[in-house]
Length: 141
Image 1 (cartoon, rainbow, N blue to C red):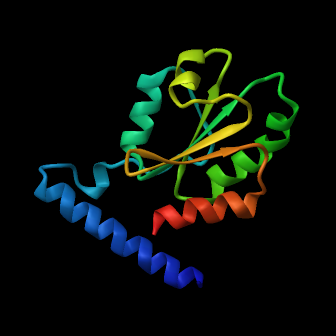
Image 2 (image 1 turned 180 degrees about the horizontal axis):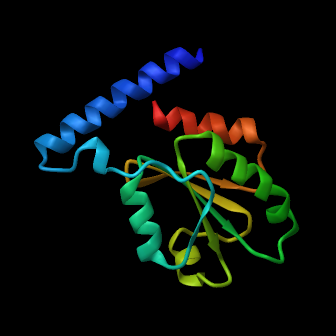
Image 3 (image 1 turned 45 degrees about the vertical axis):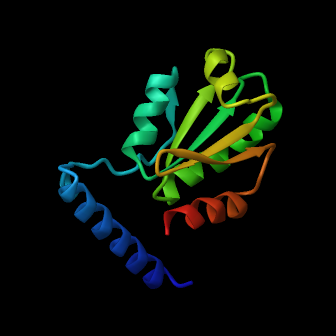
């Protein structure tokens, strides 16, 4: 699929969401948040809930500072934040043990993909940029 086709699909999706927001008494497109260009640190379920409710697609990276594979994945996560329309959240499992347990994170790195406010995918281990971008893009369209 070409970049022009993807842009057109995103435009149509944005228009549909704007229309639904106006019907539901929501906000206009100017008032909705665009995805941040870098990962956002999350501390607690309220902060994760705010990000998930504010963005169509969110990739939550559950990591630990002591985890070697997590450190290997970090540049990929940063690149995804910069190059996709998804928001990327970073959750330190040592500081957020209850949140990790809530999403059944038993090993790190674990990524949880949220689409339209729901957890739709869980990925355990290191994955490449193209795999993760493809997964994100499949939920943006």
